[in-house]
Amino acid sequence: MMTGLEFVARELQQLEAGICPACGSLIPIARGRAYTCDEACHGTWIASLLQKFGETREITHLESGKVYAVPTRVILEQGIKGSDLEKYPEVLRESESTKSASRIEPIS
Image (tube, rainbow, N blue to C red):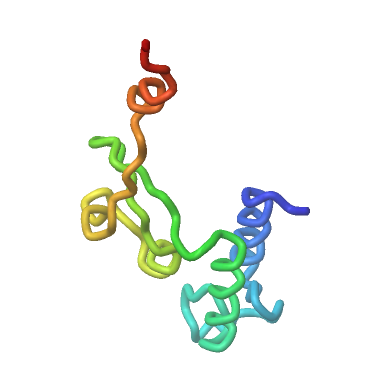
């Protein structure tokens, strides 16, 4: 089984060689810097990436430390900047202090 990093490395090697990751054919020069040879292959490729990585990814804002649930499709097709993260729902996590406090038994 291929790890996520190995999968991405293989995909990037194919893209650098001008090979469509969905069907394996050469990407026509007329498509410019496109990642796939046509729109049908683009949909297939995106679907395979969503299956591999899930519908959303948890992205941490480096300055605030907050974690946001960002659609994987947005990351792949548009990219994401730290300033864009506030558009997406924040992932609320139980803090470490709350976790440890909830394990303490009350004294009777």
